[in-house]
Amino acid sequence: MRKIISALVFAVLPLSAMAADSFTIDPLHTFPNFTISHLGFSTMHGRFGKTSGKLTVDEAKHSGSVEVVIDAASVDTGYIKRDDHLRSPDFLNAAEFPEITYKSSKVTIKGDPSKGKATAVVDGNLTISGVTKPVTLHVKRMHCGINPMDPKKEQYRCGFDAEAKIKRSDFGVKFALPAIGDEMNLDLEVEAVRD
Amino acid sequence: MPELLQNPAIQAGILPFGVALLLGLILNRLGWYWAGLALLGGFLATVYVVAGFQFQPWTSTRKLIALGLAAGGVGLLLDIYPWSRRWLPVALFIAAGVAALWLSWPVLKRREGLELWSLGVGSVLFSGWCAATMESLRAKPGQASSAAVALGFGSGGVVLFGASALLGELGIALGAAAGALWLLVAASRKTQLGSLAMLPAGLLCGLIGIAGQVYAKAPWYSLAILALVPVCVRVPASSQWPRWVQLFTPIILASAPAAIAVWLVWRVAGGVPL
Image (cartoon, rainbow over all chains, first blue to last red; front, side, top):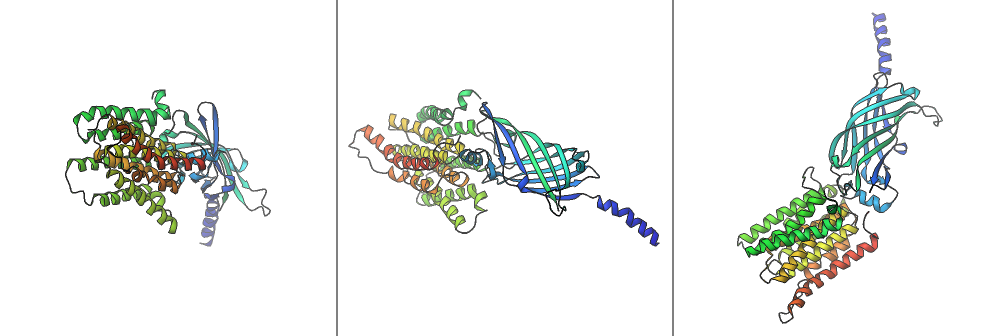
């Protein structure tokens, strides 16, 4: 009987060790960036300075989840008057809708994140100004491992770069179309620390 | 959309003025307060080109537009039915105050203490004041149209420099549409405006100002100065004066506080949002 129980324990242990890991987003190394056409003359770059959220990564099942909350008022394009305009009801309406959120519905990881050669496809829903639309993030590079800057070598973190394309008009942000472009490229640099 | 309609000067100036003038010329023949529909028609033309007529989700801008339409409906009922108007100013003040609270609720609910009370009370006071005092000018077409021009351009200018071009254009469109009515009043002594014009004019200008403060960066003191517009326009013009003096005096008096309010915000902001 003892041998059966021991065998069961040793069989279950590796499975529990391979369950999904949960991570908390590192706000100092996570920045959603965007680019958009400005009057057809140049491409304007901007980013959001405050982000929070959670990730899970299940390396055994090559899946996971992503939940990100972006402070809409933290938009930064390098010019405060433009940033004030972006926060106004003309665009992000940050006072009324203070959060931009992304929540995944399906994550498919390809490759081994611990070797730094993984990619992924994240299907989920993006919510801007109260409007929710499906958006797919394409993760170009994903790496999970011990943080070499941690003196105790205990901090395990995952990071990835992802990109997506959206149309702001899909989210009801239609002011100044088509002078200010409709299509936006999203580039996300994300790092998260294992809980 | 034709390129011409992408120009803000067309969207907020020429278009609402032209639509209001045309509607006013057509409807004025009815010889009744239907000319007030011209103001709403000009405003809605600008709404169509800058914001559209979707009402989901319920954003602050969409609430503002819907409340303007509702005010037109209430104004029409007030013109049609000879109800006692004894308590009307108080009732309009309260209704406009509730409208302002509904408009600014998403921000109010996240505030606490003095900030909550000052924002809430200020919203009620400004919106209620504008609606009640502007509606009370309904039977004086010269003063009424002058006040609507000044308050429209004033609230639009304040909010434009306060970082929201969209709300600014809506306010300026009201001023431009009211300008068409002012011309009609100048052309014919028989032109009447009524509650159908003045209630939406007052409420919309009040709500645009509040939205500019709550959701953009319009300063509170600019709204306090704008509140003087319905007061300044009431300076009586003697019937002995020449007609053109009687027409221009109210609009000049009403424009003074509006111009001061816009100038103050421009000084702080430094320019329109681009």
